[in-house]
Amino acid sequence: MNKYCEAWAEKLGIEITEYMGAGDNGIALKTSDDKVMKITGDVGEFLHAHNLKGKSLKHFAEIYDTRIFLDGTMGILMEKLEICEELKEQFKTLCSIAKSKNMGIEEVDIDEDEYFDSVYDLQQNIAELFTEDHQNRLFSSDLHHDNIGLKEDGTIAVFDMRYDEHILRKFDIETELNKIKHEQYHSLHQERSYDIER
Image (cartoon, rainbow, N blue to C red):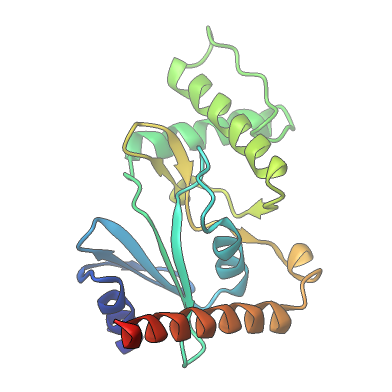
């Protein structure tokens, strides 16, 4: 396990309790306070999460903290969503319907009589998610059946979203990452000053 993860967890007063799995760009770890610590090499995913930090949005997993480690890997501490196989299947059905009508999943008109109420409800939630995304200028991409889940209250939400390449081209990525490192440095410096004063 990454030594930086363990140090970050210790700083937050939590422990890493379980290895949850690995994807194309990183690993996911469960923490003792039932959150997910994600270690990623995907700049698009990290910047998207960093811009979500501190925003409590209905259809996005909450982002509690982000970190850039000394080795260049990036960390995201986020809300843990319940992964539901039934929801994944509903999402696949919704995608098939949208494709057959040559429409986006957020705009497709679902006939409640023809499809299960659950697919109709999912489509309504996806439409709300896209509205929330646009209102907050998040420009999310990479929505698929493997990054959708349920919040504790049963609300459908997404995790592991990212900026796609055409949005990333609008960023000066090095400047953005340096700003975040600068914020981290000042935050750490303030914490140390506080500890000395105590």
